[in-house]
Image (cartoon, rainbow, N blue to C red; front, side):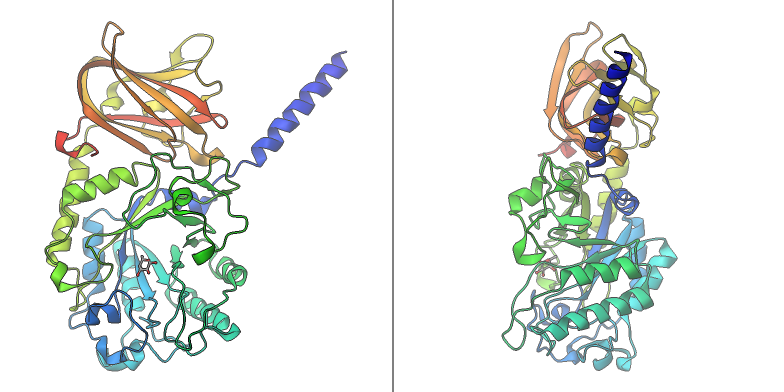
Length: 473
Ligand code: FUL
């Protein structure tokens, strides 16, 4: 009997372990990427000088001629603005290469800029190193210039270009494969060898995370407004899909799939101006610090990352208006998240059999977490030593073992245990920022996981009283 029981337990455990092992979890590279939170995009190239958004690929190389290019200025501003890196359009759809590629005749080398001796990638990769920023590269598969585009030979060209990038400009933290896919100069469309492309990256630079509409490492969020779904799973079903035209619907990209087979979290790309490239006429249409803060809440605050485009101008500099907005945005974030009221509160956990202290909840350590084994029955929270005023709660899940929470409820209670406000939501993910009309006299914050895919690991509960005009609209 004893044996049968043990065998039964073993069988159950192996079923559980099997189910767990199939749960998608982030790779160490993806975990690192999650923590990058917010970084800049720099759209720069012939379009900067022609006022186009999509060049045709027939623009004369001499068009590209920045008068004061200074990648250190970009890096300095990015750093001041609290961004963690810069991703540059090394090659946009027009095919122009910002580095002197051996595999193209449409590059900085053919331009008059620095007598053909310039190399934007070199300058930017060095500046990023100097300022301690991650360096990322956007390389458009679609190429409206290359004579081989539309033929198998172009796959070799693309692979060779990536080899140049990794060999001469690494480390490259993130590689961006844009999804736009049209005809080449000969009217032909390319059949891309995505499998080979991925193998090349993995071999040459295993620490690089690769973005495309459907990964392999990071997915597009389904819009170019910088907004993730309020439900945002880091998991996605990718079977049958390829980058570009074969991607899941934009709605699916926006929310992910609850039972998605792969860990492919969302990145929110958006421009600080209406266009991706610099246009002087948009100098007064730069998003304000408040608008950027709203985007932060809707991207980073929904468990995604924010990739904010700041297009260098024709001088080759970040424009004054853009840098002022970035610095203003940084100030707003600093002020808002300066005082985490949770730090001095008492963290507690109520499992089915009592109540205990849970310091992991408010120790500012995303690696330590409280596990919610049974939803509903388990709750956790914070007790303040004096009544507090608050309008923003930030929840974090420890993602090491995957993403689990599917629905949660937060109750704000006064010292008599009376309910002052209830906040509900679905996914948490890396960070879930919830802002609401200010509530006063809060003595405790109670979090209940209502539904979960598997054991939820709550890493942190943070509490803030932010400037009321910053509450999410
Ligand atoms: C799109 C491109 O077509 C735009 O020009 C821009 O680069 C944006 C980030 O991605 O697919």
